[in-house]
Length: 336
Image (cartoon, rainbow, N blue to C red; front, side, top):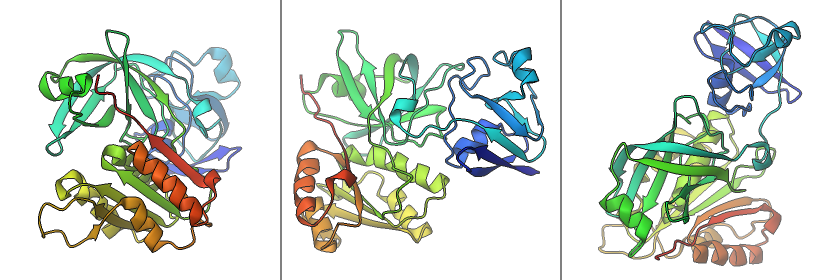
């Protein structure tokens, strides 16, 4: 059995299934209710129950006081719907709505995605969660005081573990450790989330995503969030890489395009090792310019090497793009 949940004042509506918390259901469907621990202890998800009934299968949460109950407040990370509901709650709409946290984490998975990209999964403590917006990044806090920034590749509703795509940089001390000595169960410290690279959900403009190399990671999170939220604006994904093997999740991107009529995937390679590639060639921003003579009605999300991001910005303005609708995330990796 499932029930309807309406959120005020936004008017967002989602369904919650039997055995599912209100928070989990909302996040699964792209409704960004606030939260902290997801364990009923911090009270960050506390909101008002304006209509309907809820239960707490695990017992009354620590964060729910008797006074809160008397005022029809509910802890949404633990509350299960027993009827259709109307709730009153803030929603996370920008990065300023999210608390920056410093947390320990454990490496839960290391898996090579190709010759120089490693999938790294980070497991947080059981009683902790890091709320984030799809596309944001975290910092690794290293023992010598250095920090290394990497974009999150998963959508917010899949936050049990954090997903990173880390490319091996020649002479890079940290990325060298990732590929040569880091092991599953190793402990790390992270801080975040940071960044303004997230989907502007109040827009109605068609979207062009421009990814370069592992710049695909935050765009992956954004697209997965958009699909969960039911956002059906036209989306054009351009993924630029040197060679075919550098498109390390090509099949996933193609699957999105095959299964969703509003998603169009257009990979572009700049260096061909052989004649087996029959797709687009050249620089990824040039491919966008070729396909769109007038960008005045679009918004563009660009993530990857700074040279690509800046070249795209300059070229797209010439095609009519308003820079107010150009969102970018460019990291300059250090080889210290």
